[in-house]
Image 1 (spheres, helix red, strand yellow):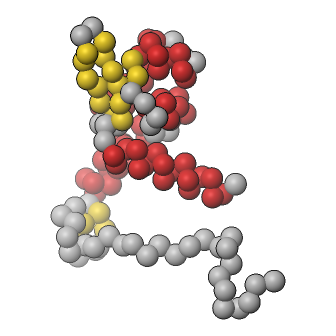
Image 2 (cartoon, helix red, strand yellow):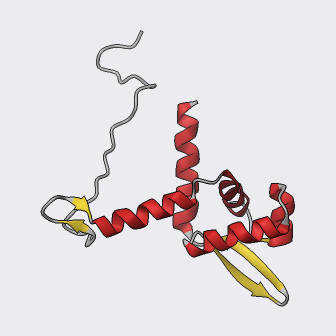
Length: 128
């Protein structure tokens, strides 16, 4: 049994980092809330992530850059289906690509996407 002064290791931890409305231009200074426009963009962004196949593609790209053919093989989907999902992910700037001759190599767009992937994965693991 833990003492009253020691925190319960299974209890949720308080969030110590906060958003500063003074420095975020997309926070309404009167309400301290994000603007309707920013909320709409965020909702669209997370709606794209509502597909498990897209998460599997992001998972594969979190470990290495891949061609469509290799990515399709890795996630067990057809190349056409993977290409379609990559177009959607590119639209929301979740993935990017480079051309190497005739090959198109896909990668996560930037460190924010890798951090998002890691944070969601870690958050879900905490619940298990």
